Image 1 (cartoon, rainbow, N blue to C red):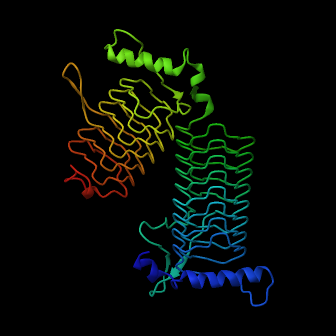
Image 2 (cartoon, one colour):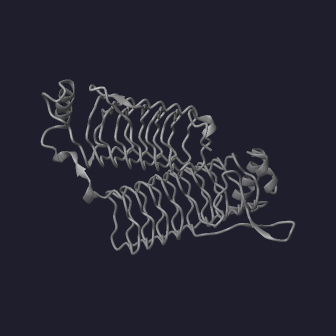
Image 3 (cartoon, rainbow, N blue to C red):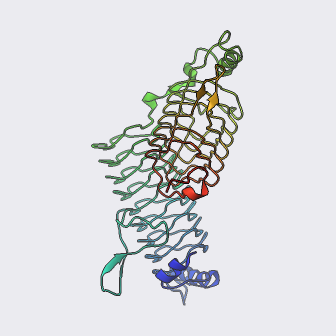
Length: 425
């Protein structure tokens, strides 16, 4: 961890010293003589392992647990107020009634965790400056938000139990939270933008004023859920998605007809239109050639599409979030307002396509969402990226030569590692 963290916190601890204190805490829980409650406040515990121990009622207020291993640990009623737990491993951790106010757990893994009645409300750790003023505690770059908002953005939290949790204004944006149980949870004003909430149970939850824009909300339970004032633009719900079972012929037959249509320049076969369909039941699209496919608002969410050929396609508002799109060919595609957040697009081709009539068709990604994508070595030569969101994408070796980057959102980007961006700051 950085020198900055070491300067902020009370001290840095070795794994051996931590193991000794954990042993004393478990003796304390079991009533063994010499046991002592674990109290480690404002300590740098980043990268250390707490795995599979019983740390119920431990106090770790304001400590750094960045990339620490807490998997399988029992932390019921633990005080984790204001901790920095970014990218920590919390899989299978029990956090029943834990104090998680003000925690930053961005990018952490919480699959199968139990957070029954956990407190995820706002909370802010403050420190005294030499001037006597109180200042918000910063951990490292990028620092957690300083407004005290509990941050679970981009976390992986499948099958997590959050029943009755207090999580008003908590940030779950772009989190992977399938099959999560949030029955009777207090979620007023919480941010679920772009989160995958499939197969989850929000019965009796209070989502008043919550941000649910672009969230995946298929097959979820909303019995007696309060949604007054919730923002739901762009959400994926069962009533707006078409199932492949409604096709007139089997999909493999339609794909062959489409490929024949392409090969014969439209003289034979049939043009394939999958607009609005949920395509995730298809398991064999890697490296398949689907030139000129029409699939506006098609759902490809989380699919393995490595090497797929989608030249001259019509994919406006299509959803490719979390997809494997390595080496995919999108030359000449219309991808306006398409969603690619967290997709792996290394080496994908978004160059212009030279048509048979000699005309050139450029790729249009206007307004597309490319947040947190892996775009290393991706080719965007002359692509239209006007108004696209590339925030926090990985762009080492990415080629933007001649691309239209007007009004691009670029938070967290360093254009100096990309090509063709000499005039872009």
